[in-house]
Image (cartoon, rainbow, N blue to C red; front, top):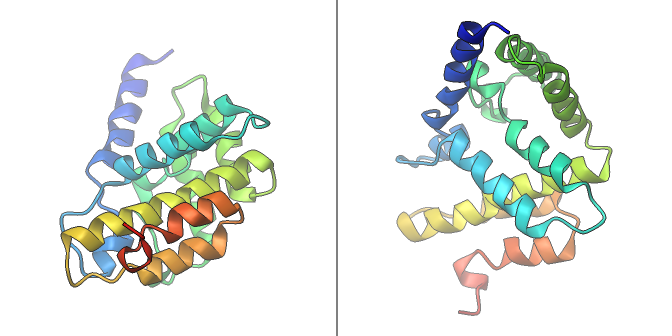
Length: 180
């Protein structure tokens, strides 16, 4: 194993700790969460909410790697006007570049491809947790930034979440809908 090459890739991946989430920046907020903080949130939701019938190790692994390519390509949003196909190719290329020196490359790529396919129960669950994380984070920003309206983010999350329990968690993040 090329440990210096692996070290360089790990350091490159750690850029996610400093990469701000673009969607929040595009909505006019500052001092927003990093992609790595988002990944932690998704991973924690996956751990806490994972149904018994799913492969929890696969779910957690998928959550950890789902945005890893953004260390190279950045956090691309619809505002960037990059096609879904082009973003997919950019991200896949970045993941390959970031995993050349690990013996986990094929596993990481397979997990990301499964996540992107959104066809397995595990990938659908991780995608739903990704959206729930966004909804919960928007509630935090609603409290921090009095002029911030989280409705756009909540509505976007609700469009992608099928589970009624997760929808309830997302819906009740909005102050006006929270009974407390």
